[in-house]
Amino acid sequence: AQRVTQPEKLLSVFKGAPVELKCNYSYSGSPELFWYVQYSRQRLQLLLRHISRESIKGFTADLNKGETSFHLKKPFAQEEDSAMYYCALRSARQLTFGSGTQLTVLP
Amino acid sequence: EADIYQTPRYLVIGTGKKITLECSQTMGHDKMYWYQQDPGMELHLIHYSYGVNSTEKGDLSSESTVSRIRTEHFPLTLESARPSHTSQYLCASSGDRGHGTEAFFGQGTRLTVV
Image 1 (cartoon, chains in turn green, orange):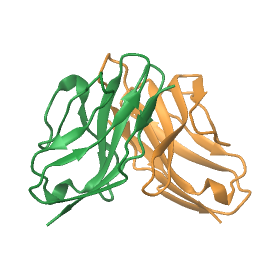
Image 2 (cartoon, chains in turn purple, cyan):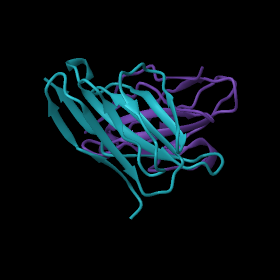
Image 3 (cartoon, helix red, strand yellow):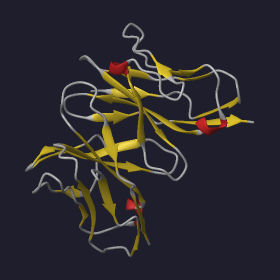
Image 4 (cartoon, chains in turn blue, red):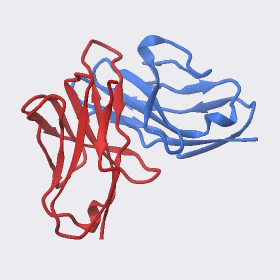
């Protein structure tokens, strides 16, 4: 069975501070991992995917197969980054989400 | 414009009523999903489909049922609504073009059973 764990339900940082949202997974196969974001009153949308190795809105995430982690990082948080963030794992059969982390960036 | 639509956005209904939540996508995706999400909580997969006439139950047991008669349509039905069914229901779809294919989500249906 596949599982995604986000240990922090709530995370608050000050504007300009670095932020890291943790994600760990368990899956026996080769994982496809994603970060989704849900801003207030908007639908859930893709932020980034591990396969692309891209930086979106200043966020990056590196897949660490040894630690089975896919942490989301941004060096300088902005107030507009405040949102709910979900880590997700896609297998051939399912798309499984973690419990989410509510990020609040304080002024 | 290619998108995924859910109707209704909000529904308040009495106990014992039969309800159908609609989900349609115009992106030509084969895979579709239904998630249940309580406010600020995780998304629980309750149903998914690989394509027409293919449906599977997800990780979270649900009394709802789904059907996939057409590629673009994936309705969810509750035969007899109960207060415990009160939640937000999210529909999503994804393509199958190799690795990294993202899922697109609808706006959700917030269901309240009184």
